[in-house]
Image (tube, rainbow, N blue to C red; front, side, top):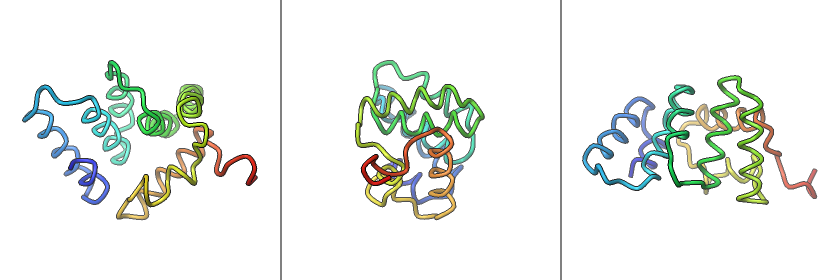
Length: 134
């Protein structure tokens, strides 16, 4: 639910909803924490996003690494962003900006949030399209 909230609701409200969900379920799955990191990225709290992703103990998913890469890039940590992109490509060989910012994987209701995500994935070094299309 919080994932949908952060994709469609105003930014800071998404943080509040995610934190409330985590308080209500102290034994929550790690993807709750990952989603909080995504919301921090969307609301431009890059250091909080980076710290939130770093706190994950076992979750190592392509979506988490995509947002981690975007967070590092937005904060100006380009070397770390590229390391995250490398891990994204290990987890999802077909990962591209086009794929990860499409309507199925990034259903942002506000075009400004989507452009923010896209531009930081570019900065991180994620390819725009599959190599055959370039």
